[in-house]
Length: 214
Image (tube, rainbow, N blue to C red; front, side, top):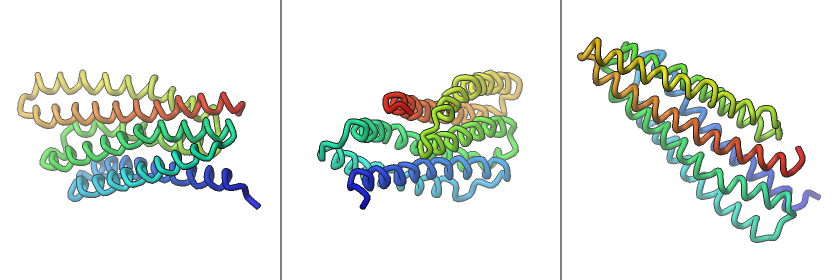
């Protein structure tokens, strides 16, 4: 028979992965909207997904606290603490996904703006980071966790800086594009911060795996 602690950990893992899959769905919606130049309903859908993340955060908080109160084995305790501390980061990831969805829909008249197209590479990188994090979490893959952090440090941050410079150039050269350029800059900042929260989770997962000897 499966021990209750194993059942609890398995359930926690599944629900945590669901939180990650929601953020991936948000990124997919954002990329699809920019690619098609069609943003109707984007704010509503990303907000619905963010609310689901909030519900899962509360559910997982209760599960973690209940599991920790049962005095689990040391390895399980470290796992529950890692998940518990990561929930706020994933909740913030959902918030940023909602904010970008709202900004994109508001900018529908500027759908063909090059400033908006500049946001796509960052969203693609974040999708890759989230996919790798989900796999690493499920499979206890240390190299995958480190890939997540490497993508952020080496590519997301560089793209963000590049977009900031491009937006400033467009504002100076084409003042009529200022609204799109400023909003694209705000969206890029939201996505860059989203990546920071993903890295926070990856760092905790790395520490947990090293502590467990994975």
